[in-house]
Image 1 (cartoon, rainbow, N blue to C red):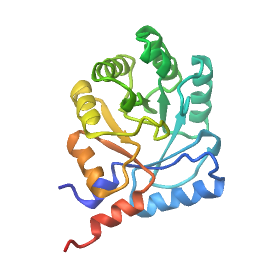
Image 2 (cartoon, helix red, strand yellow; image 1 turned 45 degrees about the horizontal axis):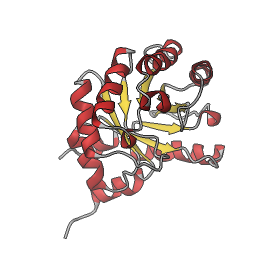
Image 3 (tube, helix red, strand yellow; image 1 turned 180 degrees about the vertical axis):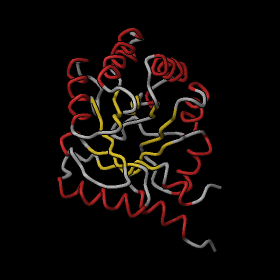
Image 4 (cartoon, one colour; image 1 turned 90 degrees about the vertical axis):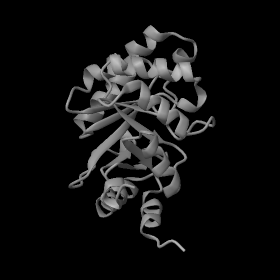
Length: 220
């Protein structure tokens, strides 16, 4: 089993509630530093966030993905200019479900064009509402268009969040050179570790403190 420190270094400590204030985000950033988390993930309107030893991630086209590419690119570019080191974009879910794969790819490519390396681009595919074939196709297109990570979920869709099955399928599809971020519904240590075992290389957690505290709790 990975160590507590290793687990913490996979965590994007996340606060995407619409009502979160600047003060809430500042508290999140300091908590992430205390916990040893890799990054924080916050809404773009809460940028910039200044915190040492913790990367800053944000979202784009969130949570529906149903945003014109020109708006997504403007949002992503502004986020980068405001200090985001990582951008988690939601694909056009309607285009994906309709099998409009060229449009899905163009959407990702447009955001990638304004999020150049070393800024990290994660592509959220909302895996809980997809068939296995759709998951595989979406992941392949994300890799083709230059994504650094594929990500299971926004955590806001009623269809659900991450699953071990989806994470494993995504990891098998993208291979070792592209990361897999599991997010949505991960609220305990056992689930977090199961996601890592399935191939997740990053975890989007809003319950980071609780989960890491479970790691330190003695078992009966």
